[in-house]
Structures are given as C-alpha cells and as structure tokens.
Image 1 (tube, rainbow, N blue to C red):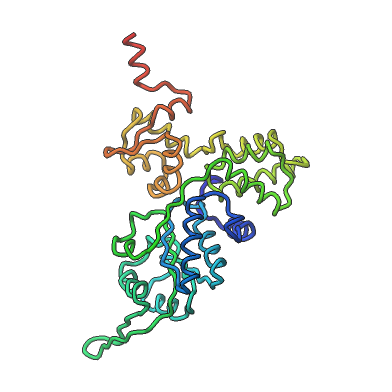
Image 2 (cartoon, helix red, strand yellow; image 1 turned 90 degrees about the vertical axis):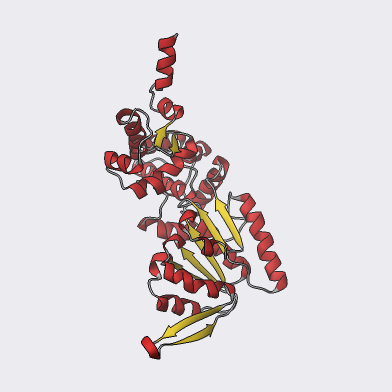
Length: 337
C-alpha cells in the first residue's frame, strides 16, 4: 500500500532524514504553528514547563515531527515511547523517574494506553508525583515519588478512544488536518533537494496531486518515482515520468489505489450504494475493519466519496462519477422525464 499513511519500516530512515528541524522548515498547519509559538514563548518567559499537549489527526500528518520541533525550540531533551510499549506500572515509573526538569515525554498511539496506566499518569501530569504501591496484602505500602516538571506530548489518530479524564488533563489540544496542495508541493521540493533528486515543477505537481494531502505519502511516492526515473535513465522527474511511474503503481489522479476503488465499487455494486455496515463491508472486501477506518475512510470522506451514516457507509454522487457510473437518483430522474 504505497498510499498507506501509517509508518512502515522503510519510512523510519526516510522520516529522520527529511524531518523538519524548525517551524520555518515545517510547511502547512499554519494555525497550529502560530498557537504553538505563543504557547512555547509564554512558557519560556515564565521559566515554566510547557503545558501538556495533545496532537491528534491521521497517520503521516506530522505529529511526531511537531513534538521534535517543540523540544528543539525549548532546548529540551525528548524521550519517545508509545501506548502499547507501556505495559506495566514499572515501565511508566522507569520512564518518568528518568526525566529531568523541562524534558519532553512523547507518547505515540496514546489511545492504546492501558487504563490502569492512565490512572497513574493523572497525578504525574497534574502534581508531578507518582504513587507506587510496594508489596502485596497487609504488608503493602504506598510511596510517593516526586517528579521533575516535564511536558507530556501525546499523539493519537483516534482521539475519541482517549478517556475523558485523560483528555481533560491536556492544556493544549491541536487537530492536524490534511495538507493543502501547495504545502505538499513545498514539502516535495524540500525533500527533492535533501535527497538530491532532480525534478521539474510539473513532475512535483503530479506527485503532489496523488499524495493524499499527506507528507509521508508524498515522500514515499517521490522515492518510487525517483526509482522509476533512474531505471529508465531519465535525468529529471518530468510530468510524463511521474504519470508513468504512478500509473504503474496503480495510483490514480486523485491518489486512490486499488483498495480505495474496491471499497467504493463494493458499496455501489454489491450494496446498491449503501448504507452498509462496517463489518459487512470489511468481509466483502477482505480488509480489516480497523484498516478501513484508519487508512482508507478518512481520505475517501475528505474527497466526498464516502458518507458515514447511522446505518453504515454510503457512496456519494462524486464516487459514482469518479468510477464513471450513473447514480440511481439520476437513473430515476431520467425515467420520470
């Protein structure tokens, strides 16, 4: 899945290489950047730790990058972990007690934190202390560990799965949305320069059009088009080369790949346009329902191809048009006429 916005093994090195190091190098999300600059500057002037920050939005939109930039702007160390990695209270205690004043703790996939771990996080976030119970039964005793003032930055793709008590403890919450086409082009130009890839403006535009308005997808497609151009001994990535490479990857002009089209066509052809339940749709397309929810649905809804209703998912007029099909309502109108 070339347009899968979730991080894959090959992305780890690429992300580190291309990751912006400052707000100036970070294209897009302008409102969030402005708000963050004020938040950070105010905290620096008061010589206080920055309030805890929650970043939510789809995969590949730059949440981890923003966390690194925040740490750099503050001159702080950043410790990185994820919700699934913190399995026991001891894991959390080890992480928190090794923090220093002003450090940033970044927890990715925060919606996958164990609920018991959340309970221990509350006093750590509010009072900078950690209550630990040692021993069992009648001999058990509670000790309180003081923690340095730190900032927790949590990232999640599914904010609705965070418990209300945890969400309420963040002083600043920001939603990262899909990027504008111009921002994706600027990201691709910057990446081309860093990777020493020669690309014509029209070639960059063609890749940007199909990048699902997501930086990680854009950079991944740039690499694949570069490979195609290299194998075909082309000096630069032109519009023609980009179109040929992306056509070979079966990515259409809107960035849809075969599974996107399968989801839409299944709703239209097997379920008369919907609505159809998520589990039924997953079974019909042989895709995991979480994969449909997290990877394919957000972009299809952004394009206006998919509608989520109380009864299930439904294909819109735009989806029919994209597949070159006539919507049932149009057929009915024609019959009436």
